[in-house]
Length: 137
Image 1 (cartoon, rainbow, N blue to C red):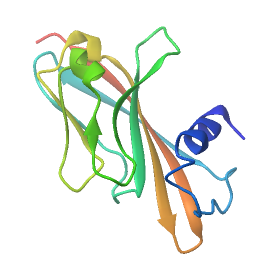
Image 2 (cartoon, one colour; image 1 turned 90 degrees about the horizontal axis):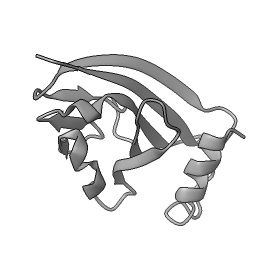
Image 3 (cartoon, rainbow, N blue to C red; image 1 turned 180 degrees about the horizontal axis):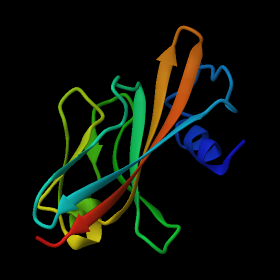
Image 4 (cartoon, rainbow, N blue to C red; image 1 turned 120 degrees about the vertical axis):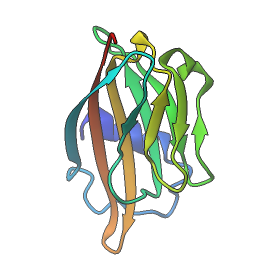
């Protein structure tokens, strides 16, 4: 089991009591790149279907430290206050899409959305990685 899957399963253990992961080794990884302008805005997707549970994290270039940005453990979306150095962070209503307005240079880095989907065959986990580059105007 990869460290990311272990992290996701450990963090979500309480909200997922009774939820069966049909094959934790079958995790999907989707990678993309985005470019935005300093002071502008960017929209980062976490799939086209709303996951049952999701966690957005941010990793600054040159570090391994993944900082929580936003999450929804099934009880409503929450934005973490420590993410304010990236810009004004919002979650689009009824989606897992992350919107960052008034982008700061510090917003350059890797955004990871860990999404858990509840399907007829059990839970499915997908990691969406988006590398964001914030450019000067």
